[in-house]
Image (cartoon, rainbow, N blue to C red):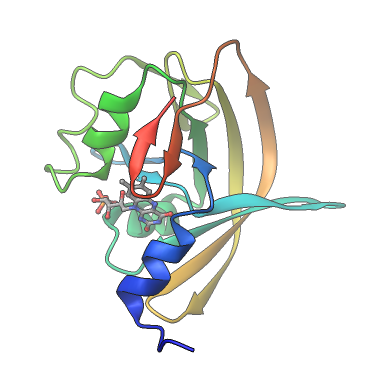
Length: 156
Ligand SMILES: Cc1cc2nc3c(=O)[nH]c(=O)nc-3n(C[C@H](O)[C@H](O)[C@H](O)COP(=O)(O)O)c2cc1C
């Protein structure tokens, strides 16, 4: 058996194809967000979802401060947004020029395939990440095909 290190673990897990989301929150300086694929539905009774935040992610601090966050599931044509929100561009700049609307204090990207609005229920430290558990308060789906992430690259 080969020893498993972080790079091998990341590469092997990259075979698990996922959708791509932008997790958003509202701050006193405006909306912020980050690209994330480590999210999933967690419970139906009560309605819960989870997102694994890198402890260094600035969006984690914003989610913590606001107590609410949105999960925007990206549509196939939104790869540029995925790249933008995965960057370390000034966090207040990420949203400039990005069409969006506020829904109950949650930034929702125009053209997202679907979105879920959550109240932050719990944060659980786990290694170099923090698991954010959200109580689902709203959920809407639109039309289109999903943007996908597979073996370290985007596809549609
Ligand atoms: C496809 C993809 C998926 C990602 N998934 C996550 C994730 O689930 N959690 C996370 O904390 N960062 C994830 N990242 C990295 C963040 O998007 C990146 O660290 C970003 O710069 C964080 O932005 P912020 O510091 O403004 O919050 C992912 C990046 C990519 C390209």
